[in-house]
Amino acid sequence: MSTTTAPETAEREKCKFGADSPFILIARCHVKEECLDAYLAAAQDADSAVNATETGMLHHTFDQDPDDHLNFTWSEVYKNDAALLFHLANAPLLKFVEQHAEMGDGFEIEVYGTLSAETKHAFSASGFKIKYFDTKFGYSRV
Image 1 (cartoon, rainbow, N blue to C red):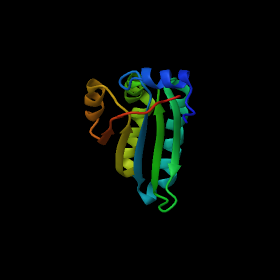
Image 2: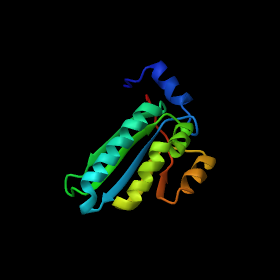
Image 3: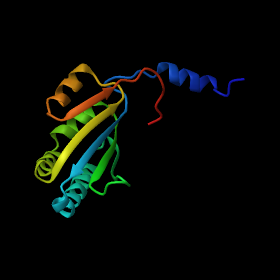
């Protein structure tokens, strides 16, 4: 016996994943011990600026690893590819990327959701290590 209603089934069937669908980005970073306080301040400034300037950023948190106080994860949900492209060109983010280059010593990104080939190309040009997990099926209520 199914508990899925007809409208829910129709919503799932019409959901297409690609440039116009939401997706999750996880960015794992490691901070140099001697730079921890300055890095946290820079990350907080970046978070505040993203909140103020990026309406396509639906979720943006900076989470600390419970086992290593120098490991952090940016957890981000984007409305669509255009929101990511805007983020990549946003001055406060560019400033933070420069600060990370000085104060961090590791940065890896994972994207969960299907981006267009053009967006992947633009993002990959950033030079970061990025792994893309394309969606095979599912739904999003975001």
